[in-house]
Image (cartoon, rainbow, N blue to C red; front, top):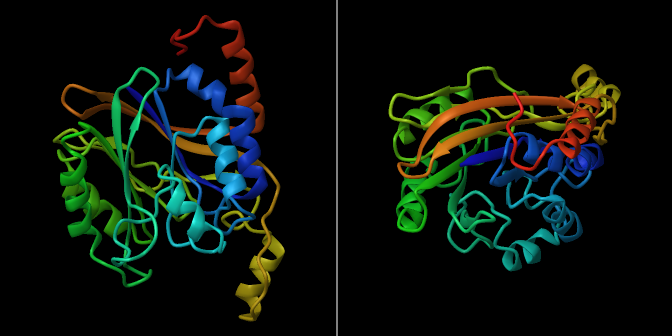
Length: 279
C-alpha cells in the first residue's frame, strides 16, 4: 500500500499545486490514499467549507490540521459535519470535530489517520503522548495501517513522538514548521518517521507569507498583517510504502516538486499505462 502525505497547504498557491499536480503524483507513485494538512489553506489561516470540499474533489482523502484550524469561524460547523477533516485529538473534551478517522482506499482497504498537536512553544492542551495511544487503541481493530500527523513546533518533541510510537503505527509525520526536514527513516520497529513534511505553497516567502511584511515585523516588532506570498510554489510531501499485513512501513520517500515538475509528472502519467511504476 502506498500513502501520500501532502505538507501544509498554504493559500491559493498551495491549492493550485494540488489541483495541477495531485493526480499525476497519485499515478506516478501508485498512491492508494492521500492525506493533506489543510490548516493554512484559506489565505494562509484556517480552512473553509468551500476550500475543504474543493480539496476533496482534487483527490485528497483525509484532511488534517493544527493550531490554525479555528481561524475561520465557519470551520466550527464544517468540522462537525465533515468527518474527513480532523483537528488535533488532544484538544480538550467538548471541542467540535474529531482527531482520528478510518478511511477506505479505492479497493476497500482501511487506513487510520490520527492528528495530534505538540505542546512545546504551543498551546498547553492535553498530553499528546497519552491521547495518541487512546486514539490508536480506538481504531486499531478497524485499521492495521495507521498514519499520525504530529503538528508540533519543537523538533525534540517530534522525535520523541516518533520513538514513542515506533512499532505502534505505520508512520509519524511532522507538520507545522513549513520547512521540510531531511531526516526521513524507518525506525527499528517499522514506523516511518519524518520531523516535518514541509509546505505546499510559495517558497520565496517567510514560511508562506510575504517577505516584506514578515521582515518588517522582525525589524520593528510592530504588529503587521501577514499576507500569503506567491513566488516559487512547491509541493512538499512524503510517500510511505506500507505492508498492510503487518502495518509496518517498508519505505519512506520525501518529495519536493515545483509547478513545472508537477506538470511534467502529469504529462508523463497520461502517456503511461495505469498503475505502471516510474523510477
